[in-house]
Length: 124
Image (tube, rainbow, N blue to C red; front, side):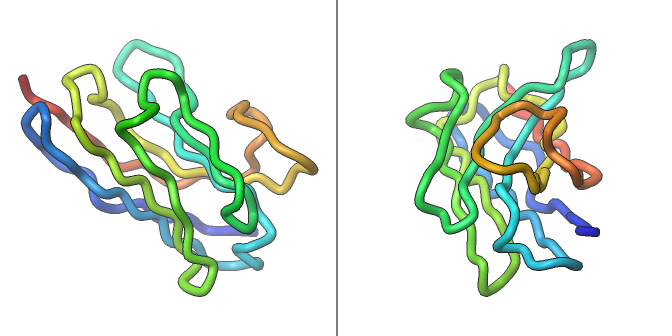
């Protein structure tokens, strides 16, 4: 069992930056692939970014490539999402998730544990 708690969301103007954090507790953090997903009102949850267990591999949705950076600190049991050049279309609830699956995946349904979400609102 892993408990995930996101923080760092808020209201920011277009072009601004935010850094989301997700603190994990419970089983060994480094044994999980970690992902960030988001869900806007009336839309399905979508993949944003993922990072491998040792941080050596990352993957991003095309809509955030070059603007967002995922990282993790296994000593602190925390994963981060640095979001730069934010756009109004980035407005959503952002969720971190932990996956115990073998290999690699950006599919939400394969991630085992989820945080409660943190709201990001980007004004134009």
